[in-house]
Image 1 (cartoon, rainbow, N blue to C red):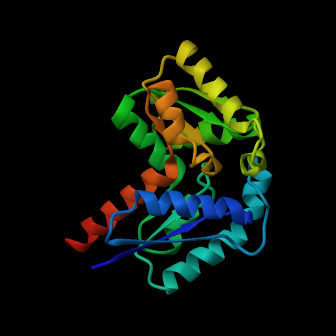
Image 2: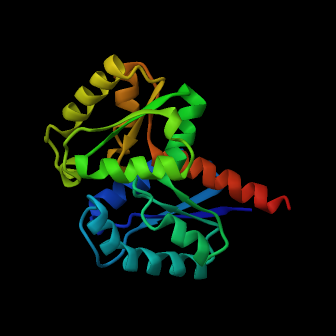
Length: 222
């Protein structure tokens, strides 16, 4: 049986959705079909609580639509796990947030981890999520690279270098066993950064695809 997974980018930036789609398809096994899309309205990026709230109506519409279309699982591709708790009350199929997925993968690979996200405005949300998930003791620190989300979509920007510099600081000061990339727009950076820094650099999109497929397979065994 083929497993169909819908990845929803809650913002409206199509280039980011395409990047997320590529990462999801690369992480999927041959029996998993990946579809990625974004709402037609809402914020162009999610930077802080206000953007997160603004994204919810479009996100929830896509979740209901995906459930009606018969997808086996849904992934919310925003590192803040925007709307995740509410979405799990709306439908019965597995719903995974890339933040929560990345935290668990980082613990499995490196035990203690640090998060490198975009702007400082996102730090309180991520820290709150870690507490709610019961994982705050496993996180050394949540750091901001001070890279605006949409800079990740600009070819030739210094976004990757700024993220890499923050990773270097984290490895020196926090001494984590793994680094979690705190934005779906960073999904294309993990392999190169892992090779450069010689520690696991976790991309939540790829991890979430693996977890989603596993949860669907487990549900089919019941």
